[in-house]
Length: 113
Length: 284
Image (tube, rainbow over all chains, first blue to last red; front, side):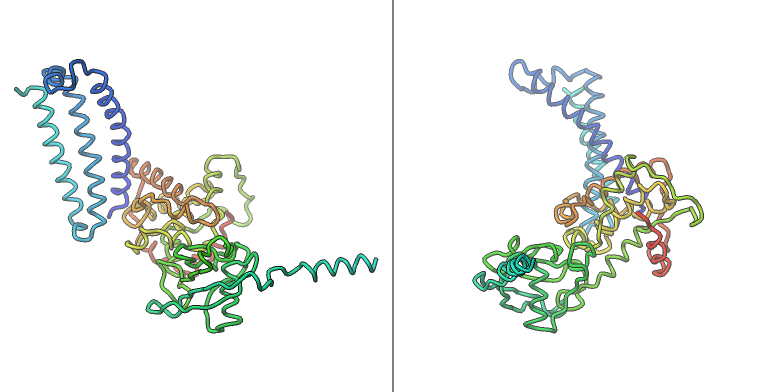
């Protein structure tokens, strides 16, 4: 494994964790304090639908999750002999899958019917 | 004067050797015998006050079985040669009192984990110290002997970081306690990485990026799981976990600036003689 790439992965995982701390906090504060008539899908969609600000917030959140979780998953797979050789590819696949699923969900709460 | 002298002597005769009181009982000691495919052998050792685990091994060898092999030198916690597995936990035996570790009057002595067994309680420490070399755990200076001694501010942050890890005696307790070493034998381990961290923080050292490249990656600091067994078990109270975290920070910074080269192939096999000379020049 390239030493420099390992060091850079550690850096991006750490930086994404620090950024996600703010996003998680904001997310939790909003879902806790913004509840009016009970925590319902209608109320959440009422807040997010058509809102570019919430789309950007959750869009970035998804990207951070994809980076952070994929690096962590790659580290786990790298330590398991059956998946060691494919850890990089599988980690990248996990990142793309998380991005696709996450952004699809963000699109749904922003524009979905 | 003679009266004083006599009572002085009587004091020592009367009370000087309380550890030989036979009423203190007997220890049941299981000792690993043979090589990797060996087994435990039982001994009965008289219990003494203030008895250390090393005293137990010494008693067995001197009075019960002279073929027992074990290793020690200083007996006062300086040399780092007497580490063994005591009741399943790696410890320095010269500073471990039996009263702290015996359970129901029983002690189990085994060689250190994660190292090849030579015989009985003696392990081959070569893989452990080879990794110090792979981690560039040797001082690389630029100044010659005729140049003035470097003035290092003892209160500076790098010097304090180096001081935190510099008292390592190389006993191998952290290495034997590290689960990552257990399943990834190429991992440099806590002691070698701790040593590298002290040198990274030595402002006189010139190895710089070469050392950072040697300690980064799959078998270096990035494999550490931060479980902290090394820090819990270190008899000198050093925190290799903190040193490894420091190496992760510094190597990441260097990598993001594009200043982290690939490890040099010869790092893995530094000539032992040269390494010895370098170590003797390390004043830290």
